[in-house]
Image (cartoon, rainbow, N blue to C red; front, side):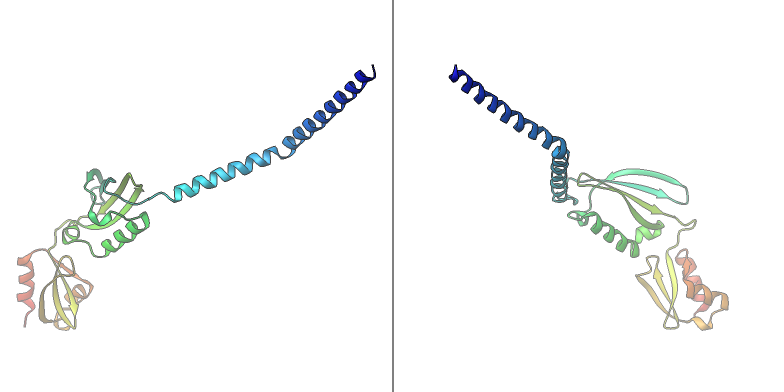
Length: 203
């Protein structure tokens, strides 16, 4: 009989210990469980961000290039897929932005003739780049550009970089309205109009 009482006391103690342990566990979950889950979620989020930052977010040979052509004069817009220029490969979005801004300062002769203004990056990812090429074609196509250099008229091609001819025409000797045009940059339509100007004002 005494033995059974001892067993009962032991079982009761074990039951009390289990109850205390279980109660403490439930209290911990109630008080700190949400904080632990939030910490775990934050850790997981940080690892995801670090992984994304480690991705090679640059243009590759497999990157698809789409160019939208926007004509301000007509208000027209069309797009087409093009071959990725070799110069773009390996560039990040920031590098491509800088490259296109520099290009806009000195575009090709063909782009100048077509009234090119600038490029816009509409979307950028390793899988696809979408650019918008904005142009405002002139109503009349010009081939030459006159300006003043060292007091005389200099004739450039329409790219404004390639010299066609240095002249001995003194700007101050021109009619006032022509002086103003040349100093502001005078566009000439074609070769006939250019030689007409040169013959008229060459002394």
